[in-house]
Image (cartoon, rainbow, N blue to C red):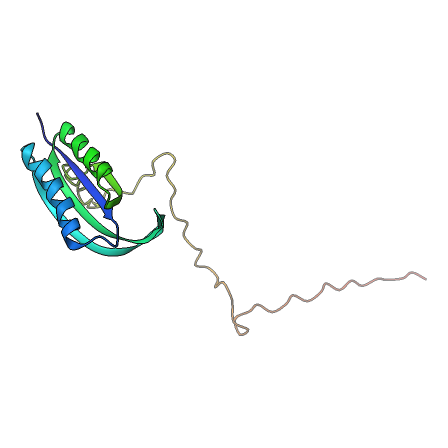
Length: 156
């Protein structure tokens, strides 16, 4: 059978002793060893505050495993975690990302001929007119034009 990678996180009762926590870890590792799987990583995250009450507990002891095992074994681990009284919550997630390689995009270098012609639908930045400043100073402001005068002649 092919081995797949899984992340297993379980939360223990905060009142569990170190012997009880070691027994749960030993059981998970024994199931993995019997199935000829491998424990890629084990992290004991310690006692942490929970986001919400779980079985009337505000805190929990977190343990994380990254495993390489088959699907039958993960079902056995799930079954055992459900039966253990010290485990108040657990999660098993299939790791679908660790085997993927990061895609690196090549860096584009502009040449002298690029950007001279606009492609359909492309937006080119507008250039500002350089004729007059946006806010002219009073010394540069044009003089107001005089109002046109009209002369009327009357005939007598």
